[in-house]
Length: 261
Ligand SMILES: Cc1cc2nc3c(=O)[nH]c(=O)nc-3n(C[C@H](O)[C@H](O)[C@H](O)COP(=O)(O)OP(=O)(O)OC[C@H]3O[C@@H](n4cnc5c(N)ncnc54)[C@H](O)[C@@H]3O)c2cc1C
Ligand code: FES
Image (cartoon, rainbow, N blue to C red; front, top):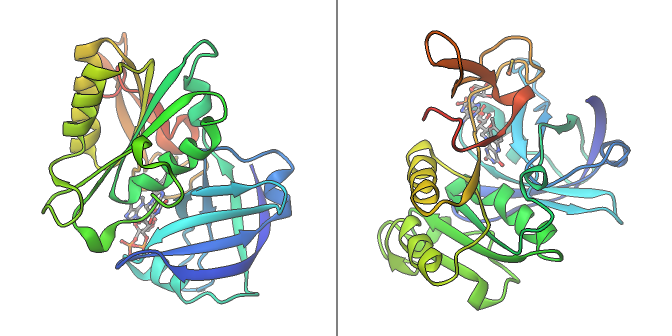
């Protein structure tokens, strides 16, 4: 992990609550950047010293650019929303493990499942893994105004739904996922989204005997493995039956069978 400076190439709206930051960042590519990893980004506001963790949404290795899909939520992300073309931002990264570590070489079919903001890293994984595996993307949104991350994908590879039926079927993302598992069982499922969605995806995977990895978006402090703010509970052979792992340093991607949701 190291600090690198990124130049804002573009800042544009993505959906009602999210914007897309395109960053040129040569330093990030010295050690490589992969789908599933995140950057810890300083928000250019002295009164907000804590960096914000944001997943990599797209990678352009030739141009040495990454894109981030950011939900304007609190002070930190609103400060990022105000960044303009040409601004300089400090990043730590790329941090964490990548989705690819979880996909065995002999896998053929991979299902990627995202909910809301969690669509960003799985869309990146879809782009990165499609050259090698038969990938399909499952995405769940609250409503049509929050849809992003589906552009440029063949229709038959996308299964998108919304909570209120304003985009696709009115359903949770586990509905099309369950249907497609019955038709075309994948070797691996990779997911990112809210905890109830991850729990449901994990249960479905277990029921069908499919390997599943989940990316956890926990609150973070240091992002460097030191403060333990981001701890999550995993099953372990301890007297209590569980142990804590750091999402920033040990994840953010974990085997779903290990996680205690
Ligand atoms: C590994 C990882 C990847 C993420 N990827 C994305 C992404 O691609 N796009 C995106 O929009 N958001 C992502 N998030 C969530 C994002 O980090 C928070 O929404 C953001 O930090 C909120 O900061 P804020 O100042 O706007 O909000 P505030 O609520 O004002 O934040 C205050 C503090 O809480 C922390 N915090 C608040 N909510 C979260 C949260 N859900 N997760 C972690 N820390 C939080 C902030 O870091 C900050 O220290 C990711 C989080 C993690 C851990
Ligand atoms: S955020 Fe400090 S240990 Fe993970």
